[in-house]
Image: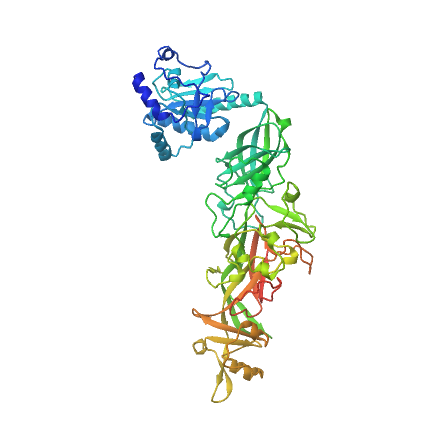
Length: 626
């Protein structure tokens, strides 16, 4: 496509639409006389003329600032069909090389609002630059577009494309990669080949692709000595590789062409998080920023399509020396882990039978479950601490508080509330503001349905751990199971005969029934007759009051008699009878299969939290945790 040559005075007016501001460092000539410049055409083999462009936010880019690296300059008009086609090609090149090889897109004769609208409509993400003055157009002395220049690190044009033919991807990619390699060798830089691995527990046979998907990766590089921020690389196009010989990891992603000046670095990676900081001044600032992030819902029922938030293991990439790799390619392996832990919840049987001395007295069907004490805060990078007693929160230092976990009996994976967890009843009473579905404010709403036997419900929750001296149910995560009770029969009191009559027809049973010594009774009066107790037959009793007499009650609701069992998540790693670190709690990236394997008694008619009870309640539900 060719645009008619524009009169200089018209062009002077048009340029005002493209220029937001002119910095003193950029040449600004208001003269209309460009007759000499108009005869000079920049072509292959020529040196690039000086220029000044403004990017988003007014950032200045000049020919001098680009010395030492390859780049592409493109003149376009979004109304031009050839330009539209070439912009797609340039976007693909931009996706492949990112900031390492800048693509300078300069509109030939359009206002920025019109260009921005086209970018939004077509999904282009390349930056658009505004020339500091109209002289730029005359330096290239052409009104034909598209016009694209590939420039090497010395500022020399290696290829020039007009509208016939336009640039194609294969040609551009091959040329740009060659030039970028040459520039990297001259600058003493290292080309990093990223191998990104996502671990999956071998026991987790029921996983979904997006549990381990990575749609975006932000990698931060800090000086290992001064801890100052150096650069950030954002990777969006990762190629998943399934067939690499790797016994430890199931899913591996590869990405090439991250380039970095040689040095010694601390490296951190964050996946699938849009709020990652752009330019932290230091490692400490970075850690503080990411530690302020919250996950306020406390639970994810379904993983986002783009994948969960993940981070690299903090100690794996500290003090990485890249100096020996100048001019070479270094394979940088980053091991990622989910911020969330996965819970797989189920039952081993649809119905559990309650028996005594080989006599069945009821069936139990667990119908629903609800997770309690869910953290609503988290540390993005996992912290650990070693201690003999719970003390004040330390200043987290690398690598001291990011060391690999070792089961020495005193080292703990730390959740954000760790140092607030004490044995104080008063302290526990304030936890409702930090937790979602806090046990101290338990309600019988928001239960999830329990799948049938050999099927599983899923939940993803934040890490929640407690120091072993403070492992109480006010602090640790747990599950409340709701179950339906089906007695074999209920003893009814015959007021005429003053006897107890066995009744097997549920329609004759009252709304509240009582269990005493493995038999159900219709009333306290009936229990008194069977037991010889003298309880007030007109009184209403709580579960705790009845427990003192060896009695349990069961109430009718929504068509069934209900009972509740509470289980505190226990993945014991200490010796028998001795608590170990993290015994109660969940840890990020872990996979837990929680299965009710049996029921050995009736639960409670209501859930009345005692938030400071030790974590060994007699819940009458047998639960297996893998």
